Length: 130
Image 1 (cartoon, rainbow, N blue to C red):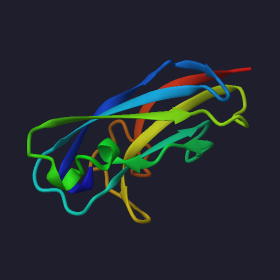
Image 2 (image 1 turned 45 degrees about the horizontal axis):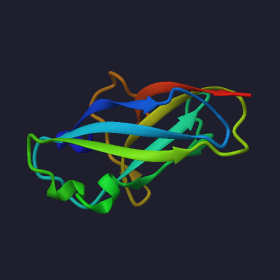
Image 3 (image 1 turned 60 degrees about the vertical axis):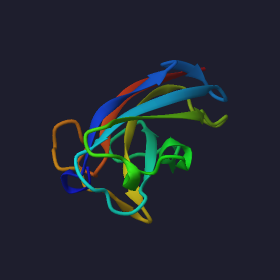
Image 4 (image 1 turned 90 degrees about the vertical axis):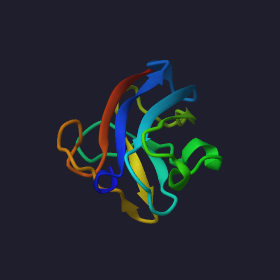
């Protein structure tokens, strides 16, 4: 991410099966490879097809307590965020996409491996039950 300054180790979602209105915890893992410019936020998108965003959970990294510009090079950072599934979420399978953004700009992902081509890292799926 961000031209190589931040590396992503993926994310996990718990629980992976929910109902609309339930809460999940999404945990993403990052490592700064060098100095990080600015204070990017973490985005969490949940969609049912390429480029879709049915609902999201954008937030400051680590609740704003340890912003990316302060991450020491080489340290693995664990960002856990609670996300409520909206009551209007239709039943089905949703793919998690995540990454970092600042303002209206998503930080660039350097590898197409594990990304969707839209500067989003592909994460696990969740199932919303009726």
